[in-house]
Length: 125
View 1 (cartoon, one colour):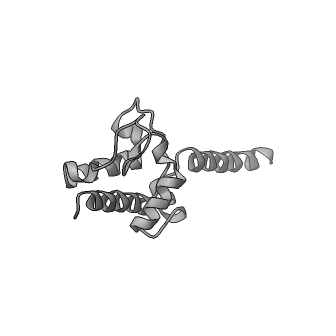
View 2 (tube, rainbow, N blue to C red; view 1 turned 90 degrees about the vertical axis):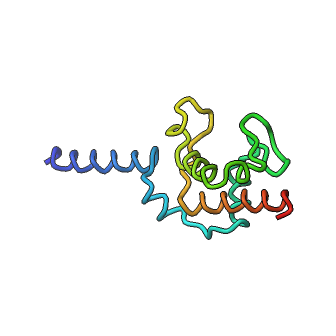
């Protein structure tokens, strides 16, 4: 009888650990959905303390690449690259110091909108 309970309990424990340690994208999109606006992106940049490592809009540290003007540098390829970094930094560079914040697609959209808006303002556009 104990064995019949132990196997399902083990399976449930493994699934819970998986969702906590490395949540699948569909789960992130269900549980971390936000309104994808530049204002929300600004809040997320503060929430995840991106400026602790990155300079954004002239503010922050330079421990990691300066993100000021990043959306203007290479157009759409830059946004694709940024999206990949935000989805899973270690999939882009295995030895990166950037943590995986397990962002949902809408959180990523909001952050990219914020960066795009900052860059448009700084370029006068």
